[in-house]
Length: 352
Image 1 (tube, rainbow, N blue to C red):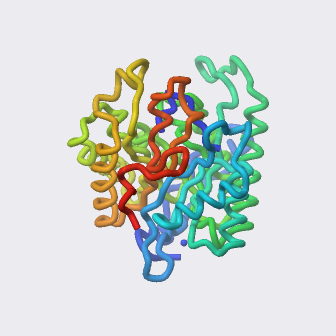
Image 2: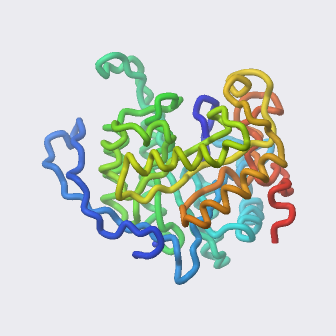
């Protein structure tokens, strides 16, 4: 989701397999690894089809309900259980963006109750310093660095504790695209990716907007990961509804062309059901928000990704009122296929 507006959210060869693909030597980084020799890099296989069943149509999941927010009041164990019971009726794969207590609760419940769910688990990476020209540190953020350390350590632990549930992990979300509100140097991201990959056995990626992945500079980070997670929002890009799916397909093709040989996972795409008439969203979003419009895009998106076997995480499962600005119509609050009270919107009202 666009980081211009506040955002935080905190299997072997088979379908779409990148099996043992030998890549170029890893790119150099600064700091302690600066003088290390180039490493041979073998991409790990991305498998999202247990047995004969493809589970690549996934959903992005943020667990916070009205009155809850990251770092503050959070969902109870029973509320997370309720969410998982809703999710399992429609999807077998979900994405979580950070390894806070809600993520560990979800993993515990999935295992204890034998729920047919897999999780793409992520470590949220925040900006550790404000940099000036030439990389000079203008302001240091030690708390953010400590939070990043916690995220990385916890991601490693959970990926190793739940290999039956966590087939794939991500390090960082929208940290490289030019408009990111929590942009970090590529060298910093690469160090975290290398650390996580060295300590785990599953495929590792980082997630970012197509406006990063379709540019040559993204190849430096791509050399360090096993697959690519891209975000494509036709709505934020000013597209009308009838152009939403073609736009998504075009940008997906651009990313694939820039990174031949990679599995490209569509980590976020969606259509909001409300938007505010002020601020950046009013300037950028031209398509009409609404439940009928969301249903149209969702149906088209699922048909395309299923037909082409494109792994994806539709954005998102539930509305989250803590996001964005204070206005109730703020677009960031209204991407869910379910409302915050867990009642389904039009796109899923007739789903079994």
